[in-house]
Length: 238
Image (cartoon, rainbow, N blue to C red; front, side):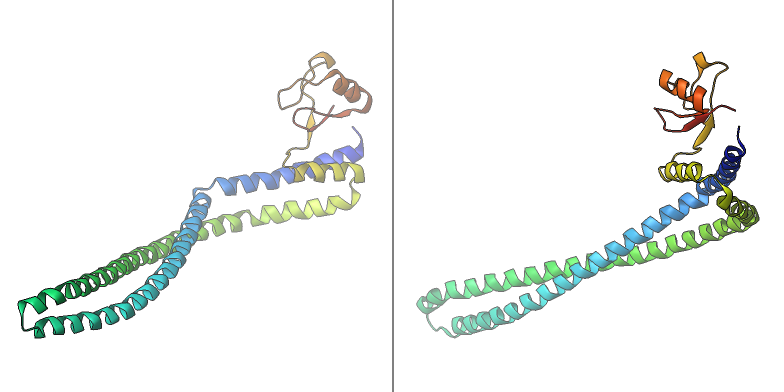
């Protein structure tokens, strides 16, 4: 194994240490709670915004319906006055349909107003619940964040040490190996460079569990490095 390859393996080893710290962080119950409470908070905020928009629309409807209601009320009062002032049963019979029609319209508009007001009341109640929920999840979020910050502070010295060593190695790494490493790491492959599994060429396989193809085996034999056709890792011989 060449010195330049040993250096990229050292760099990878440090990178895996950082990855391990990150995995420990992401596995913490508080990390899941942080994400869950954040999502609940955002969801509650979006619902509050939607309720606000709906309440404004209903309020505008109430204003319009109430304006129409007043006009219908005026027509009803006029019809009622005419009906009450009629002196004969015949005149009352003629005025009755107009009076009943005005009364029906009045009841219809009153029902519309009551319906919108009831909807606004339900929205208001829902908003109170959502505000309480936001308060609760914010408290959970803050508590989880405090515990996660404690983990970050605890691991900060190790992280700083590792990152410093990686920075020191980068300028002296083989460019082609380092570029390959960065490319495959950006694709989510980790580790990138892995030792071949198996005691002889016939049984050579990658750590992903798949046996290397004959082409891979020949390349590994000639160049001491090949790429697994299954997981894309770069396989080397120790």
